[in-house]
Amino acid sequence: MRTTNSIKNITIVIITQIIMTLLGFISRKVFLDSLGTEYLGINGLLTNVLAMLALVESGIGTSIVYSLYKPLAENDKSKIIALIQLYKKAYAALAVIILILSIILYPLLGNLMKGSESVPYLTLAYFIFVAKNVVAYLNAHRLALINADQKGYVLAGIDFGFQVFTTIARIIVLILTQNYILYLLIELAVCIVQNIYSGSVVEKRYTYIKTKEKYLIDQEEKGTLIKNIKAMFLHNIGSYCVFGTDNILIASFVSVVTVGLYSNYTMIIGQLSSLVTPIIAGIGASVGNLIATEKGEKQYSIFRVSYLVNAWIYSLCVIFLYNLLEPFINWWLGTGYLLNDLTFILILVNFYLTGLRSSIGMFKSKAGIFVQDKYVPLIEAGINLGASLILVKYLGIAGIFLGTTISSLATVFWNVPRLVYKHVFNMPVWSYFRNYLFYAMLTIASCVIVTYICNLLVNGNSFMSLIAKGIICLIIPNLMYIIIFYKTKELQYIKNILSNIFLGVKIKRLFKDKVKEV
Picture 1 (cartoon, rainbow, N blue to C red):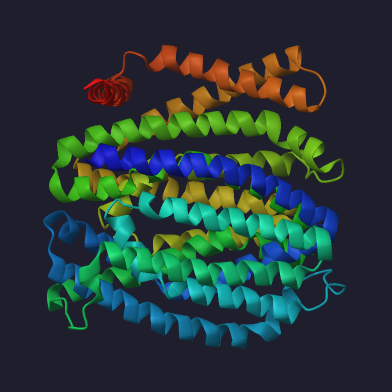
Picture 2: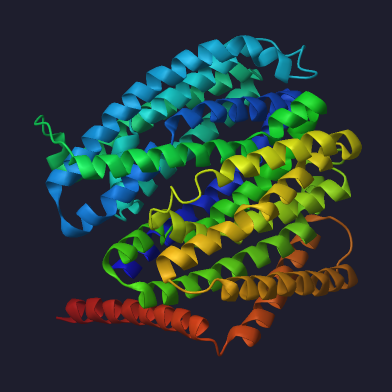
């Protein structure tokens, strides 16, 4: 059942993301043509500023979702209702707090926007962003339940429909009006309708949560929950300072226009991530169920499989991005939208460092390891901000990203696997780093080989050149990795799962054909 639900989640999300990726590139092109790079920078900066306010969430969602895995596996409806009721109250209060903090933060906004004086209606744009954030919290408890129950695919089609409608509507508005405020209002209106509709779908599926009777969790579990929430609050602050402040630092020390240039890179990387992360994230709830019901040896064997998949995926992503990202920007938007080479390399390094810890991070989160390293994110944040503020003076925008690299290697890079191997697998961590080094060296070697072949066989940045490079980036490294890993237990496990899936499809088709004959 875990495998079936994971595959459903992965398949549906990937299909919808492919379509949304194509629409996203069209939307970004129309946005730039209609409003320009300055507005693009403002859009990215406001997104980061409002993400800072989301720190008030304090990890409540992650902690309660973790607490839902066991009662869902045991069908303990009383405990499920108690957690959902607690979640609902907490997020209603947080929505009000975030609204108040947004009002308090507004007067400081002008100091963060270097070179944005010519952009009108910034106040209205800011509070539209605030309204969208607040609306999202009002439905969070329902979405948490269905995701923890490994049924996220139920809402995937609904979300897809709303996303397509929103993107097309925004494109039409920009073409006809070139009005940024109307562009934002369309997104807010659809967000409100989507949250109402998705919430009703969840309540119909889990009708027992609609009860007016009050349910309470026991004091021991409440104490554990509060402890985890406090720890997650520190984690969230650290994560935001490391990954959420880039646009703020760039806008403050470089310019808002540079934020716009950087956002093109992050959009492409984000779209690629949205296609590949479901393969890892899609099994996230299954891992929570696995940890709740299975023991160490089974958990470790599944981790090794997910680690290989994780490394394989992000290796391919780096190879694709190194060879295609900047040529694609030149083809897509024209010349004049690129960052310098050092900045580009550091963006890819940080993407790889973050991506390659997806599987170990997933096991840490699903195992409820929040308290043991609650201060590490603050140390990481301090190193990141300190290094970035120093290095930006000497390296410009590249210094900001180098600060992120330094802070990551100094903290979470080694500490997260240490905790998981100690508290979940009960074994030494050295094998993790041995495999990590092997995967990283393999990625670098493969990237060098593929880049050499691309430069040898393909010239120019035309659309057909991009297609040719893409085919090379897809075929060469995959052939190399199949040869290298073919005899490993992990790849054989994946092969058996895929074989069973295809066999199951064939049996179903055969059965349907027989029924038709009868």
